[in-house]
Image 1: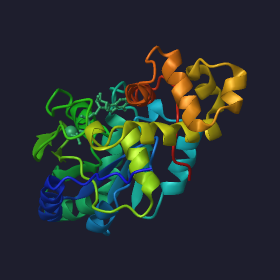
Image 2 (image 1 turned 120 degrees about the vertical axis):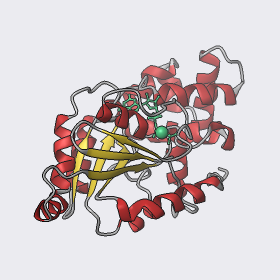
Image 3 (image 1 turned 45 degrees about the horizontal axis):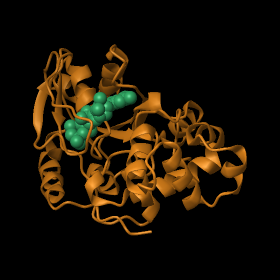
Length: 279
Ligand SMILES: Nc1nc2c(ncn2[C@@H]2O[C@H](COP(=O)(O)OP(=O)(O)OP(=O)(O)O)[C@@H](O)[C@H]2O)c(=O)[nH]1
Ligand SMILES: [Mg+2]
């Protein structure tokens, strides 16, 4: 399999911009994709954030395996951060989350009140990999369409301050990746779920990676999607199974086209609620 070249130069700029603003921020909201909390956790962000109060959101929880998400919630909970799982596309009541933000900022709020502020403003920044739902979440928190959203990575280009009705200001930031990954499966997972542009990797490599993972952990889901016979499903090699599926879906031997289609269906939840990372 080819190694995915996935670090566009402009992300250095985005990273530097976040670093510049960090001193102004009271609480960092790190949005992870609930289906890949490990692969979507940016080591750069963890380093930048340091000891700041920190809220981790497992977003797109509606698309992830609920049992695994619960395990992640426990595994990620730590000293100075809360962990919340969320579906920001469908979930409209954000009061619980706004309260969690305030809880995370409680030390800061106390300090500001001691200095005489009656209703202090809390500044937060939303950070995370491309396409994990940062802008969607912000729009929910703000209560109207304030940030641009799109079903592809790289929609938000610059930073933007927005206000909620509860004295919380939020900085929307472009998704950032990191220059090197220690484990190449991280690149496959990010590509599979749309954090990396489809044009910069071979979709058949990524589809094959997903096929192997589903065969192992979500066999029945894959079996149903594949449309091949039980014997074929059990006996074909992985590349041959992908090819058989391509044919069943009427794409002759256009392996690449089917691979992209397969990934798109996976991203939309059409193969069921799937988690590709386990704690
Ligand atoms: N099913 C589901 N879809 C979501 C959720 N949150 C966001 N989306 C969808 O995911 C896609 C990306 O959302 P954005 O909010 O633009 O993501 P972003 O993190 O701001 O992306 P960049 O600005 O490119 O970094 C959109 O198609 C959203 O509708 C969620 O919780 N569940
Ligand atoms: Mg965005």
